[in-house]
Image (cartoon, rainbow, N blue to C red; front, side):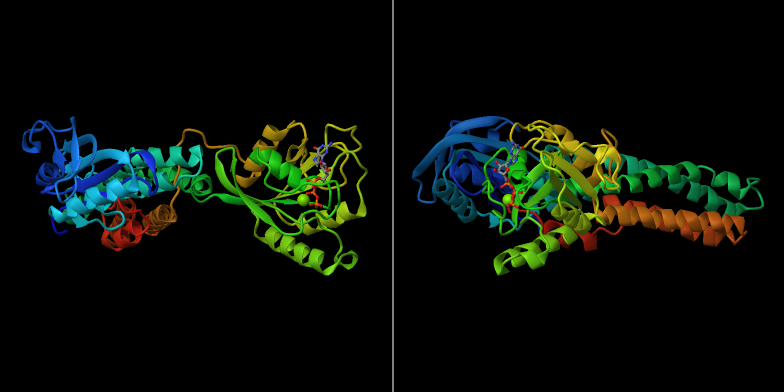
Length: 458
Ligand SMILES: Nc1nc2c(ncn2[C@@H]2O[C@H](COP(=O)(O)OP(=O)(O)OP(=O)(O)O)[C@@H](O)[C@H]2O)c(=O)[nH]1
Ligand SMILES: [Mg+2]
């Protein structure tokens, strides 16, 4: 367990803001409220979860701000302890002095993630939910936030708990058979029949990991092509901002440029690259740029080959295709606002038509179809999973794999008529694997690793 002292931290992001919050959790929360906050009613008599107006005091008793304070009494708070929140104006200086006063009044400065760690230790959140808090704070697109919010809401935990519960029931029946085998007339196949359905659900969850990992970890997309086809213009159009330099001269972009891009909910690093030409045709600076482009191609999850639709294909376009053809590719037929010389159907590259999208960086035409095509390629050709539950953590998918392996061994064991206690052992391995996701089993080793990812005050 943990030492039940009182912790405090500034909970809002560093820098100036409209409102800044100092958060305190632990048994001394209300006595600290009495010292740092002056209101008409003494905090000991405050109603739980109600905002009170008053003055914030520094450690010398000087008024440094006016604002609101709320006490959320245990166990109905984020941490499960008495929690005090001081809502001041968001001046970093005021917040720092307010925090200092709380520390002088008896609190200790919180470690990163310590509030959430206490929430876990007090049973307010399970491990999967605590992980979701970190994911939510870090989410870079709405899609990532929605996955994390579902996990925080306990949807994943409930599904896994229910599967684990069913495994436990099968295990109990099996153990009864081991102990009282003579008196129970139940074939082991029947006892283990529910395992089939559990396995199907676990297989579905395992398959959802690709989508979950994409939304949580993001992906990389590279814009590639010969000089002057409009790669930089396309990057600017997709971002809605003039980030890359665009000119009518071939060879404008010399170095790679990376920007964060929301690709239909998938957080993506979009890279603009130097135009590709056979290296023999280039000067030393351009050569280095092209080398970098090749490095980007090797690392990208999807390479976008940009072609200029208003011109016939050139040797350099074929050269660029050679560089990307072994990767996952989407073709952007750019400059579609001009008279077209290239058509989706007549391209000489072996690529499915749905992965070729006419666009115009100039007018913005086709950009949403383009985003959808790239997102589909990032998902390996499948559509978004929508409202279904997804696994988004490597730790979770590893546990599901362990559970599935155990169920396989159970099935093989039954077929080979191995002794029931060995089957029961394997089944228990599966139960524990699922339990490790929510922290019902063996949470200790995960805790330190997890909470290191948090910011202080969360
Ligand atoms: N009409 C039209 N012109 C475009 C479009 N996209 C880009 N251009 C023009 O094409 C020229 C080259 O654009 P860039 O974005 O610099 O091309 P790039 O592929 O980045 O070129 P490098 O950096 O040299 O490899 C510029 O004059 C752009 O204005 C488009 O969709 N329509
Ligand atoms: Mg460029």
